[in-house]
Length: 238
Length: 238
Image 1 (cartoon, each protein chain N blue to C red):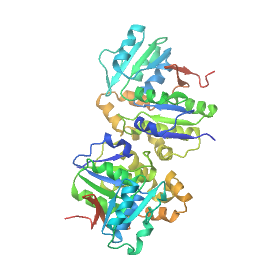
Image 2 (cartoon, helix red, strand yellow):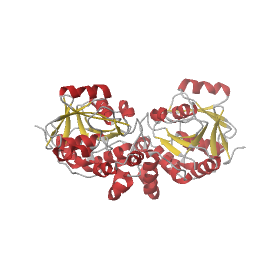
Image 3 (cartoon, chains in turn yellow, red):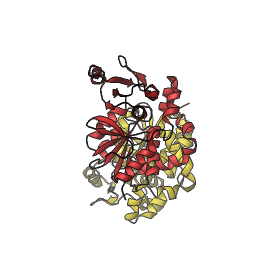
Image 4 (cartoon, helix red, strand yellow):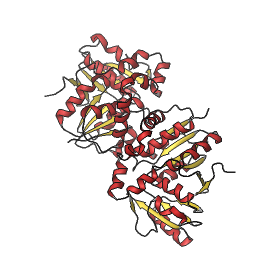
């Protein structure tokens, strides 16, 4: 039986051995939810970039640029970090370059040693779980957190994934978060709206983003990092 | 209203501002449970020491030495890290020097910037909560974890303390762990026996230690760090 473990913050990633494993990076509010939504709405590829300037510069190479810091759209970017911007195929066929406060940092750290990097969100939870079950590799869920700290939404997603794939674990994070997910899955939205980052987003009047990011299994795809570009597949890549 | 926050691992302590606050350091299995038990059984003071050699050397100054690494008694020490060693006043009036894998590291990190360091355990949960309520300072619970990783028992203690003192929080760790504690408090022992460190201890045949460490409110005292020595008080120090 394969194993799953949870890394609750990118600041703890050095304590996890990612070699030969699949890292599932998650930043529910909102980076990875946005990436999955963009992919489901026809963008041809998504380039996660750590710093603002490198990301912005990709506009000259034909990328649509999305930039967020501290929950707000960064100056000079085409878009912020809202999944809703990508609905209705508005950027179909385009490449997107994206940089965010936490999510793109976590992707960058995960790819240093993981065999494969997958992007997780509640929006494609089932598809991701099915893919991982079929792949039969050990999994480390890398929670993006908030500036290095534990956050509730990413950790609960990790717990949901532990529940969904049914792998073994010898990891207290997996034990705690799968229990908490089981307890709260009946009122997930109400529980997660108490999370500190959800409250921060509510202050920015983007409550619609929160509700969207907490929708389960809206999209039937997985999102994989291939040569520094996130590319979507219908569950099982060839 | 005062605030409480949880630092889930000593590796994340730099993300928490401890200045002017009370740090409650917790290492349920077993360092802080042992310290509280030793204090309740009449030792005159407990010196937490980070490294093995410095700790062992204190024997020449009349200290009883207690040393543990990876769950086992360290060679050359009088005692390991079992709270049961201190029952029945066996070391009454003695000074104890103690070094452990995780707990003494966490104490050392916490004292660098906290106003006051308190030692937490399930054994003196209520007394600690009452003291904190009376003191009216902000509180950071510092979980010792396991070699830097999140662990269940320390985090659940933190959740129990959040529940017990009723302070406000803007901390997802406090939200998650107080919810998980409320959910599991009816079967705390069964739930915590699934924790990875509890399983590790069971392999060392020290199940009696686990049961002891999970006893609620056996002792009515608080344990405070004063000039690098842990000293117990009947709730409110003068």
